[in-house]
Amino acid sequence: NAGVTQTPKFRILKIGQSMTLQCAQDMNHNYMYWYRQDPGMGLKLIYYSVGAGITDKGEVPNGYNVSRSTTEDFPLRLELAAPSQTSVYFCASEGQRSSGANVLTFGAGSRLTVL
Amino acid sequence: AQKVTQAQTEISVVEKEDVTLDCVYETRDTTYYLFWYKQPPSGELVFLIRRNSFDEQNEISGRYSWNFQKSTSSFNFTITASQVVDSAVYFCALSEPLMSSNTGKLIFGQGTTLQVKP
Image 1 (spheres, one colour):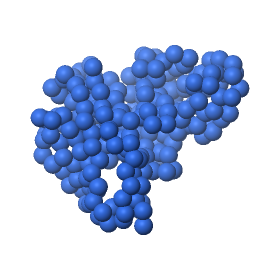
Image 2: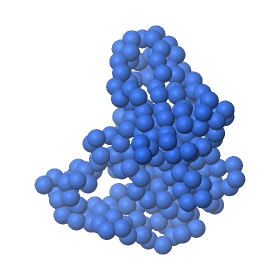
Image 3: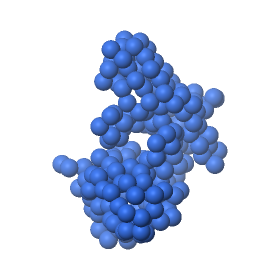
Image 4: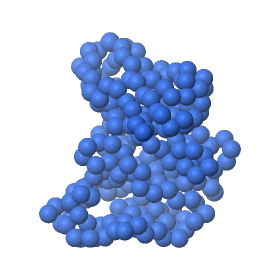
């Protein structure tokens, strides 16, 4: 029972490069999220999805894109990486609405550095 | 607009001391959830508690207790007899209103770093 799995754990990018952060969950959760955590700033929502084929912007979506072709996977793509995207990225999914509404299970995080 | 404020950036205590982490929130909604998450040095986020806005009873779980006061929009977290393993960053969070359009998005506070020294 893996929960939420994120890859890679660490990555260094050069300015202007692109990459995809992978996120997969095996709990059959419909709702999934991408947050970024900057030092001393808490977590900010980038994008979220309420089900396969449905995505929407969060608070800080600029410079990112997502897709949700399956219930399990919710990749986050960075186009034209910038130093401002240096952060720790967390993927999360929400528990079943019957008992776990709004309770998020987080992945271990992906630390991205853009130089 | 919704907002969560954790005014204490860092707290340092000696083991066995009691410590309270403050959380103040702003919302115009009447139904919502409040949360606390723990982020130990290993970096993962661990769910601690979810509290419904209708339920203002205090909750105790072992050495942890939570005081929810809707009148002051506060949801404070107390650790009794702190231990070194309690050292972590603690986040308070607020949900959207509890209606059919709720998407599960959370608004997080800035976090409080707790250091428990032996």
